[in-house]
Length: 538
Image (tube, rainbow, N blue to C red; front, top):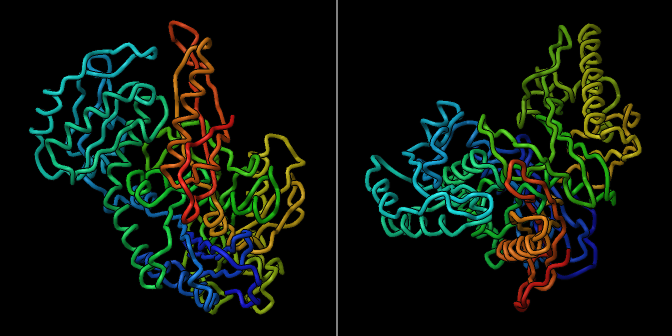
């Protein structure tokens, strides 16, 4: 934990927390985004314990200034872990609007059987949906919706609704949501695909179902964070969650859209690395205890993937950072006999199991210490037999090759892009990595993920379908919707603006058609700021 003296700058303080597989990091930034306290604490099995320890540690450093903390922001892997581990997921009833046109592939087609059996409470493909130009495929049948809901057997924790082209024509989904609330009561949450994913029926439906299945997880995480905040006397602080595009969302928004937190960890690292290094365009590598996550920062934001992404074996299409994860981390196991790298890691048990800390397990951290490549840790030592030493050197060499291959893959041939190295295992990346530009190691880079959470903007995204002739109208409509969603997520209405517009031609349409995707972002609303009509700037 930092012991350096606190700057004299006063004002609102922001506390950022990021939960990783090995460590839970926390930082405090002042009103000028200067880091004034930071800590790394081991992630605990129950996760909440690590959050509690990290927040308590930075608040202790603040002393009397803890009362100035106005905002608490958190990035979390809870949603990802729940999907991958099939733990704590709710039972979801799925309604697809599109019959008779969309009956060939039932909902949850292609899901792993164990995940499907865990989540699905029932599914129906009912009349409704639209063509790409807005023409209804068929009229919505409220009676059919009601009959499906009445026929459900067993517990139903949430309902997911997905209509064909509903991101552009959302009215039918909204009507179904009203029917669900009337039949099942307001206590059963409804997940609408228009709020979750982009155009692309099956992938958007999958993301919507996952979102609905995560509602219980979201409540548990929210309650845990609020409990810690209350315990530490920060009850007046506003609480936000990081989402996967590098922006933040308010607590109630996050509770309704938990699937949007899935890529928040890597996105936080990229945003924090860009801010700490001052690099607007760069490749970022965040080396943790379990993996190295590599991404690209473009104009200060994570470059987003344009391809569908798989989460726990499920294909989805909501926007995610373009991240490449490899099994190179401080806790990655090394076979002392052969030098084989991984594939598993000791994770948050690094400080008890690694050779450098008195344990009996060889890791990449031990390889770096043995070869003298563990900068910043002169008190670490590894005393091994020559044969084991040779294995450690071999493993570290393979790790460097893997990092080089990954950097070249993301750079698209641009060798002048700087490489920003952050994360607690950053010492594993050499300064002379072939294929990389200038290697930057910013101060506080070991907690860049928490910095990214603490200084992020609130954001929103919207999609619209339009013709080439009506392009301006489609952009304006999507921009207004994105701005409104950013404000709903917590952005200051006076300062929110459009930061990205993506236009994609739509294939196989009867007229020249484009899909417009707009992202808006803005600083978090300050306490006491006045509401004002938002202004979008393209």
